[in-house]
Image 1 (cartoon, rainbow, N blue to C red):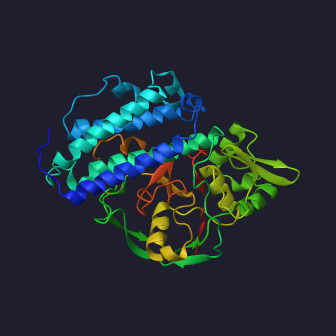
Image 2: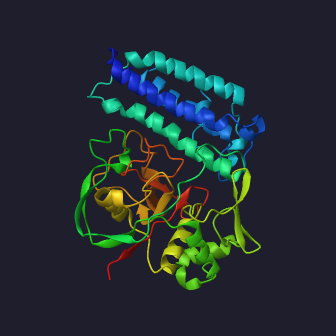
Image 3: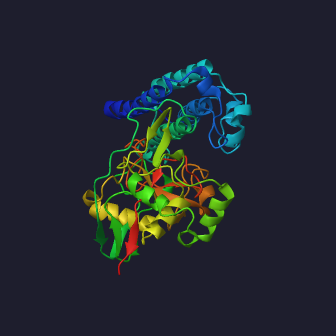
Length: 395
């Protein structure tokens, strides 16, 4: 158990406010849903919502009450049931999950104990788990990230949309030239809640390139579809073409369909005409890459994306708050990487299976959507709120 001492009042209030703000978003998201909505598994790609909800409580209990507070597990079986590595999403509906009422009581009990313990916890700077309140930041961000995951489940399941429920419109045109040279990348001291994969801060020399000021819109993506983009082998990578043929019947972003020469989509529980000026979303990396090739461009590397964001941020529309932006980069460790506070957060995902997304979507909380934050997923995934910002080499 950590040594106990009284914490500064402002620090206690700051942490409490962050924890409560995340919880309010969670409860607001799930409040309109029925019991059946919460317990059913709408897709093998996603967990039942009630698993995510109880998992949030288990994670908070594990790290704040047990790791920092030295308390015993509330329910021993939770360590298996709510372990994301032990259970694939596709089988989580078969686990002995807490029902909605029990899950709600569990999260409330954990939170009350955390708030009672918080003023007593030592955040000794010699203890890396306590340094700059990182452990609390990790718990807050974990809940906020699961809010986005649960929102993906709402979309796939045709369930009620959260509010605000859509990305902002795209208005920026043209591109900018990002001059070549060194750039300091990764999280610095201004980001005490940065994850291990954002560290350490390091210098990289990046050649000059062009990057679009705006995101690709639905209207622009419709032109790609109408031009036969899903049938043109020349604009697809070998792997992308193989994915397209294997999946079959994919001829547009997730949930799009054409009716009477007009594109419609299923957006949560509503059927609507595709808004032309919204950024296209729910596209896989393969689709993003194919679109960029078709447009005579390419996807930026994550180094290019971050340099452009750092140097020319005000000139680039919707760096965050609209859609996640696919990059050409595989998810890899930065030079000098050190796993912290547990190796399973980042390390198992390094390699060529995953592609990096940067920025943040309209669902992503600003606490998470910092410029150094690195999201990653399989290149075939389309349920994420992912879109496209193109780049190009200088001629």
